Image (cartoon, rainbow, N blue to C red; front, side):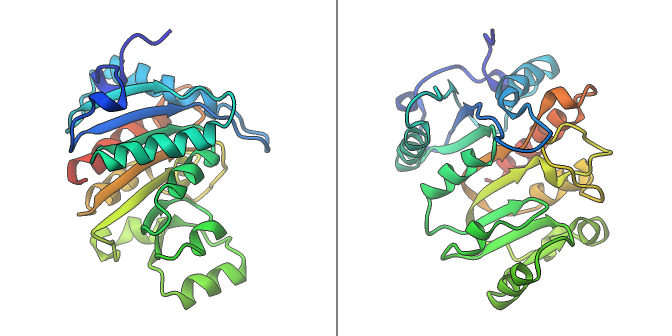
Length: 249
């Protein structure tokens, strides 16, 4: 039973969130395929770790608790995100599986996206505004590379980001931030639902996101499976990356 909000945020409702603050929502959905599970445990595991570490956020806000996944929860999630955006509140959504991010992005259909993930998704490639890709690996299908190239989307691999400064990325002034924890190399943080050998180092991800002078329409984190990482390094990477994003956004 979680009694304390994420990073000490008080529990509350969207109506209690002030303009310019964040509304943090857990969405404990589970992956529906593959051998690695446990994404549904992520929201409460992150709350617990921020309490243990004494983490604080660089912004004010409310913890809205976890979304009830009965019924049309994807529709409810879209409505909640839209309500927050209409009140000038930044939605911070802790998944969960990738379907959580898909619902968040659907609430911002025309906004650019910054996506930290190992494999490019076609639904992101086909959005009206370009996506900036962080940490792609070399296993993209040829037609995906072609579409990214044709639309002149900016992208960097994990190795490139280890070698060059993050400010070489073409980042929009405002965007939706999607962090898929599978972007991190499994050897550094084992608690991800996707396997990504040769992925980013946690400190590189934190540095890259923290260097972006971008205001965020929303932030969503998916792909964290805390039970797979007994050291807690994956949760720590998610917490530090979120803090880095909120310092600018």
